[in-house]
Length: 105
Ligand code: H2B
Image (tube, rainbow, N blue to C red; front, side):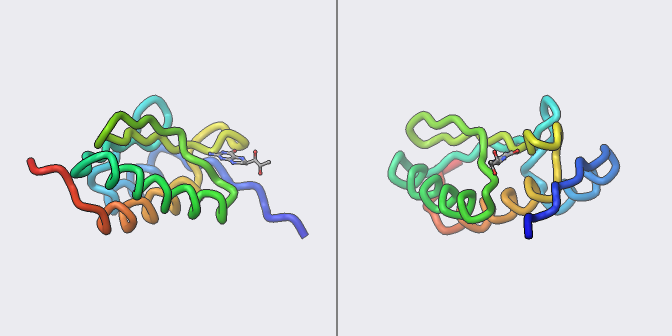
């Protein structure tokens, strides 16, 4: 049996979900966050963990890494917008990021 297609969320649903993801915002129709880690090893450690979660979900991030910085955009291409899968990946990323040393502010 195939998994059901994720349903695109409307702006109200996204706003409600973002209240539980305070460092994320909607940008260009995608969930966006920038992480700053202590160094490249911490950033790549985060990305490695996130890659395994993404593969298990069959749901993959758009991201950009330079040294300690990882910029993430999450959207569901098949649905043409943000779905519950993006929220799930965002929450997993928050947990994974919490395990890595962060940049000093
Ligand atoms: N990731 C994201 N972010 N959106 C998708 O629509 C998507 C994906 N589709 N990962 C998956 C893979 C699909 O292409 C495969 C065939 O399941």
